[in-house]
Structure formats: structure tokens, C-alpha cells
Length: 370
Image (cartoon, rainbow, N blue to C red; front, side, top):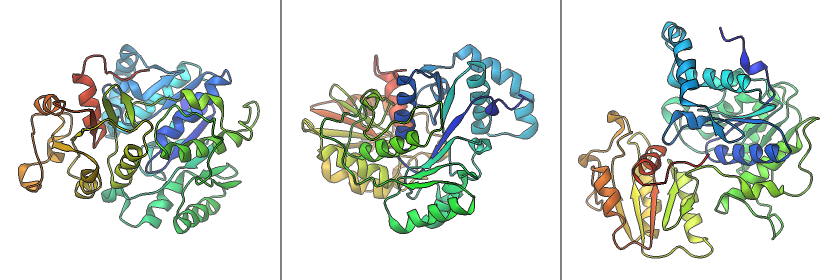
């Protein structure tokens, strides 16, 4: 009905369990630095759905989003389209209408069956694999890898930063089966030059930057390759809620055990060190492996309050019966947000996009930066 707007501009398609949003940010920043008009579609949002769709860092306007929604409403209802399917259609339509030169598109969930997988991109990438969305993707990492590699396309370069040999082999096997070429496995254990700066904090961002670098080097003309070293533009990459430090606050959208391990590593390796005492406000959906996440986080924080962000759907909220005696649980989010600050040298807000987004909404001047 929209005339296939996703065919009106070249794209880069990036999936994976963790790190795909950061990798998208690095890639988009370098393309902008080269002078291109760059679209970026990511998910989920923190405060407003308009954050998901940007051109050169400028989100879609609320009026434009509402207009596309009104135009598509009868078709959304006729097809019983999901929120993400509808938003993806709006994203492609808006990026085409704003005449982007190229767009960086993040996979929503999985890969093979994701709404974004209507693309025929210039390059595809899968960052890394971990357990998440087991209701949809299953609990077998090799099976998840095959789903994620479902974005691979014939004669299109496929890049992966997966470090586990067996999982990487599964990604490569599926990409080959789908005819992708060439297939590039990035050694994410490499360390860049000492003078390399990244705009996103934490040692884990080096791996994401290396994947982004490989993606850029696979782009055809007229897009210039990034060459041997990580681009200088990576120092200015920004995406809200990825170990984002603002004064005494740290915000991170980690929502699975693998993500929480990354947060803990970033805390322990922070330079300068995190100011103590470190207090953590944590809200996790009850359909996540939250027990494992809390077991990872508890040893490195001095105080922990569990809470329920208002934007979490009712069926996915914690109840008192869920939690153990170790937990300080306050379901009143504004009160918990106030209490966690008392006596803290640093406050960490984590556990989900909902938790970070709801905190941003309630802290003056903390809305995501475009």
C-alpha cells in the first residue's frame, strides 16, 4: 500500500542478542561523518516511539508519526499487524520521505521472521548470541543462531562478532546456506590502538566497534571504506541507556544475564572508578531470567531496590510472591527512584528499557538526547 518504501534507499541490517543497537550507532555515526544523510531505525524506545526513527539524529516528528498512523490504521486493523510491524512500516515510509542516502536498520526480535527482514541490504551483521525471548526463539543457542542468521541474503556480505566457536560456526553455516558472500568473522578479542576513543562506555563496546568497522569496510562504492583503524567518528557515537553516565547516575538497559554481566564488567573496569556507595534501582520484566540477573549484580552494589516501572505491562510485573527475603522491593516507582538516591555516591538504573525510560521521564532534564 505504501509502494515499498524500503526499496527506495540502500540499507545495512544488524541483528544479534546484545550489542546491535550500539553497533548501529557506530555505523550510522561514521556514515554521517562521511557526509551522507543517514536514517536509523532502532527499538525499543525509552520515552517516545519517535526515538526509534531518526535522520541525522533528528527523530520523526509527533505530527508525522500520527499522520502515518492514521493513514495505515485501516490496514493495521485488517491485517491484525503488531505494534512493531506497524512501526516498521512507518519507519521505512518516513525514511524514504526524508530522502535518506542510506539507512541503518536494527532487527527487532530474532531475524528470519522479523518485520525488518523484508530488506535486501548492502551488508548484514549479527553481533553475538545469548539466551533471550525463549518463548519465541527457544532455549537452544544454536537454534537461536540460525534464526538470527536468517537475515543473511544471497551475494550480500555477512559479518558476525560472535566469539563462541560453536555458535559462530552455526551462524556461518546458516549464512552460507542462504548464499551470503563474503562471510566475515570478526575477532572481537583484538584491542584497538591506545589512542582510540569510543563515545559509548565499557570494554564490551570495543567488540561492537570492531563489528561496526567490519560492516563499514564491506560497503560498496560510493560509500567509503573505514580502512584499517577504527574511525575517529566512533568517539562521538551515542545511544541512550548503554552504560550512560550522567553525573552520579548510570543508566543501562541490560535485560538479560549476558547484558547484566556486561554492566558488572563496566562497573569493575570503570576509569576513573565508580564512586561508592553504589546504589542500584532495578526493574525487570517477570518473563526475563531475572533471578540470574540479580545474582550477577548483587555482589557489586552496596544497596539494591527492586521496583516496578509503570510502563511494564501488568502481566509482566513482579509481585511480592516472586521475590526472596533478600530483596528490598518497592513497587511504587517514584518513591523508589527518590529513595535510591539517599547517601549514594553513584546510582545505577537498570533491568529493562522500561526502567531506564520511566526514570528519564521523572528526572528533570534527562530525556534522551537526539
